[in-house]
Amino acid sequence: MSRLGVAWSYEPGPEMAQWESFPVVVAGTMYVTTNTGQVLAFDAASGAELWTYTPRVDFLTGAAAGQPQPTNRGVTVAGGRVYLLTYDEQLIALRASDGRELWTTRVADPRSGAIGTSPPTYWQGRLIVGSGGSDVLRTRGFVAAFDAHDGRRLWRFWTVAANRGGGRVWMPPTVDPRSGIVYAGTGNPSPALRGEDRRGCEEWVSGMVALDARDGTLRWGAHEVCDDVWDYDGGQPPLVYDARVGGRTVRAVGHANKSGTYWIRDAASGRSLVPPRRLVAQTTPRPRPSRRGAHVCPGALGGIAYGPAALDPDGRSIYQGTTTLCMTYSLGGREAGPRVQFEGGDARVTPGTPARGAMVALDSASGRVRWRRPLPAPLAGGALATAGGLVFSGCDDGYLYALDARDGAIVWRGRIGLPFGTAPLTYRIAGVQYVAIVAGGSSIASLTGARAGARLVVLRLGGRPLTAR
Image 1: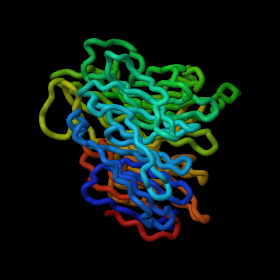
Image 2: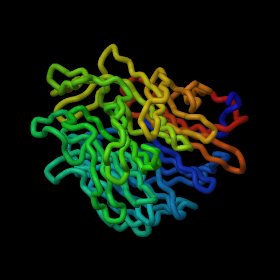
Image 3: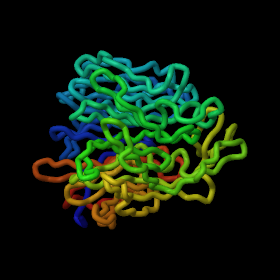
Image 4: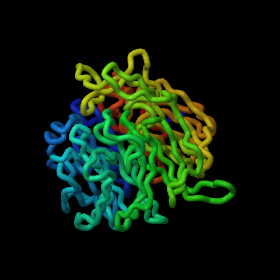
């Protein structure tokens, strides 16, 4: 590990201060997007730029709806095509060889407050997308499927009733190839902080839905946080795997949300297989937002963010990055300064409670914590587990860490100098193993004072010395 160095790198420029794109490598080509949805194709071994595609995107509509910072988390590649979902809800198909546009279709009207942040999921000729959106406009979330050949919409499932807002789907849904069931984590109800007209558990917000990928019918739904007035989105993509429970193999689905809790459920029925596991310190009971301000741990950007968990190649352990970040929720707050803004209020980092992080290893069947490795800053982007017994994750202290999968010991760290909003990727070309990571921060970094910037770094054994920018 000491010989791990830079194979190649790319810096898109100083104007991009929040980069959350998850690179994809197919047939020796790496595809990555900028936060504005531009698609870049590189030779994954040398870093030579092959082509670029710049979509025509309406950013003003999203900004007016309370989404001032555009985000794009990458593309999907299948069947010689590259599929892109833009900020203003266009689904676009490109030819993978040269980036030529093949078709485009509209997923939702951006004037409704709907925005696209993440790539679709490909399954048997279908593109399954989730829709994010504005809390200010009380936008409804949904999951929809489109024909990958021509962009025709096949079905759409609304996560909340027509007279409600929320339940937005921020990350790509997960499809189980065995069952054809699609799983999607859902966001908080809207308005986020005010819940005078709602009590108890609502369908289907701050939780998860399981749908038939063929026609979008609901198989089951699960609540994770009821009466959610703390913005505890379940944005993380669900993890589907085989678990040994009670001496038998069970298809399971794991999922977490910003409350900092991890759930393991039966993938077919949604029934909890084990009690949910709290992975960060939580205020109990949680006070509701007030005009005086309510201190809650974790806050709206704490707990477990949107980044994916990693499953050990042997299927026995789940590796989950966490963030300890307490926030104060205020109704009517409109002061200047770093904050998460909602309709009728905001959430701010509570003074004197610095953000910290930890990587946690869970037993994939029992949910028992195998080990916990504290780190000095948030882990928001996600984790990578390798067959070589390592767990990689970027930390907002500017370091990319490699941990021993057995006990969490730090095996290696390399300073890139920027916070991380995505998970690492590994791939092999001509017998050489590479590890790639996009650095550039996330919404958490914007509130904790982490350095802004953007850098794609690809590492290999024997590469050039890694230096921070």
